[in-house]
Image 1: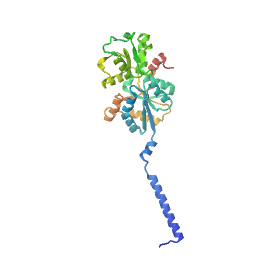
Image 2 (image 1 turned 180 degrees about the vertical axis):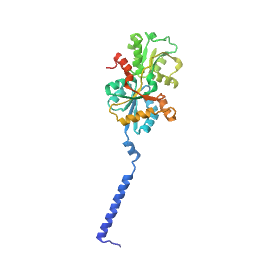
Image 3 (image 1 turned 135 degrees about the vertical axis):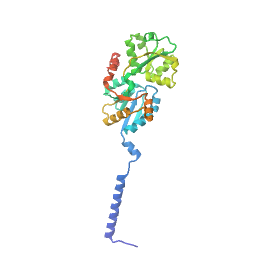
Image 4 (image 1 turned 90 degrees about the horizontal axis):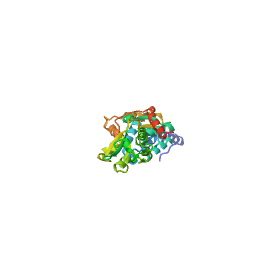
Length: 300
């Protein structure tokens, strides 16, 4: 049996312990964070969109957008689509949403109440229109023909489904009962279906939604006719909440402005958003909407 003198044993043990401690330290310093740890350290970007059509379907269909933004910004992207327009505005104001896809009117509301900052918009949003629909066999051919008829708007907070259609109805001096007795369907798709199914005589909705509904076969275009198209106005816009990290704002803007229809992956995102490209947005472009909303008593 081998033995060591006490002094030599103490020295050897100390050396071995020191080596073990240093080795552990080196291993600990060189250890890469797990995927879960890396994910937890990422910033989160909370997005929300007003429900222009079925909220659940919009959220499911938005997966390519979420994946693209996560790749481009490096942030974890969480997207929600509430049941109505007002819910997006309130969540935005409560700092539960970082970047929101607003209609022009909900943007104007959020800018006034919460300091929303316009970021980017589709090029088409700089000259948007509302369409007035009726049945293909209806005698309605102009705004004046709406007197005595039943009419439908979408959400009360919708730009193209309520605010601007009402504005142009008033500009045309259409009988006041058309507006006073109008129903609110809650969404553009619901308005189109209400007209197609003859629940109402006519209704107004977003041109882009109508194009998609007919393209996807959700409504039969042969059973409907557009009898009035509004003059152009500014509409949808992506906006950031006051106080959002400037780095996240910059990353989001760059990602959206970089979308290129020539890139197949980018085109999938653009098609989802019914866009050809994105351009910078500015607040002054929405002054006409402010005037319309104020005149209708909807903005104070």
